[in-house]
Image (cartoon, rainbow over all chains, first blue to last red; front, side):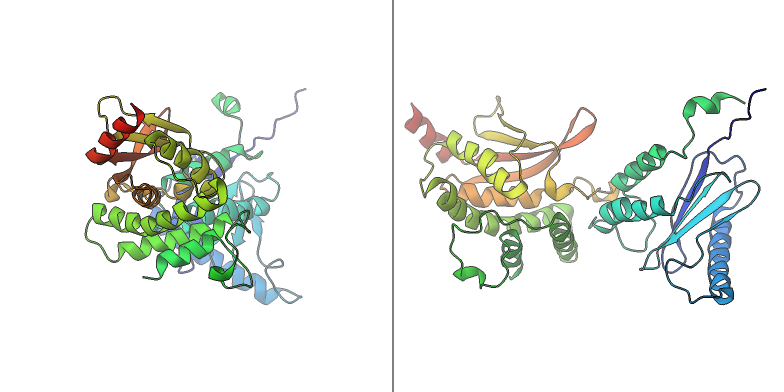
Length: 157
Length: 200
């Protein structure tokens, strides 16, 4: 009997600035499209904010960067969260079996967000990111992750 | 205008001694972190943006800032690299800029040095990925802005100081996929005249 192959998937990515505005969104294999993305951003941010506070309040130990909310998992997806010291929030949604992508989110912040958005004089801070270099290197980076599905596997219905 | 001096300080960074007191030939190997320079340059671009009304003005501002750096670079690098020997031929000046100046500023030589065949007074220095533009993506509404106008200014400062006056501008040229930056140097007619006489 063939063992059922576990499918790796990266569904989508959100980046929120410190005011809660979604400054970047991208999706790759999202099957259920949202009918109102703006609503979804607000919902997502609100949920993350509440969850972060809830986790901090119910924690038996004092909270710092490393012990706060990192990720949650459901039967259909896993959400990974990383917040920078400047309150920029990186959120990525993947299949439930993906290992923790927090380090990859840190890398995304350090090598792509800081380099191509912050160092770009033509990008206004806290605005939606439209910088070409940022977008191309972000997509390249996500596609290079081991958790990103192999395109050849996706052709099966 | 303190900004060019500040940029020059960053380019030839020192730690304890007042920069104008240090010996000129020492410390030629000092390097500045790319991040530090990128943030400074980013601020320069944004600072210029608040004072202009059009994209060509913006490029001219960046170019003017580069000009004063170019003038100093000519003196400094002539002293350090060539022991104050002056270039009298056009092609050797261009070669000096293409190899020595680029190497000292950006860590590598420029990718190409070409002469435009249709015009006798135009030369191009090409760079596949010019350092100052490394983290900059120009949105569509800024038109043809190329922040390498700063580098064009540096080159203009060098050629003017070497008595080969020219107009120098930076352009994007598409080249197998990505955008290549070209620094276009258009010399004044008397320069070409003089060079023809000297080299004939």
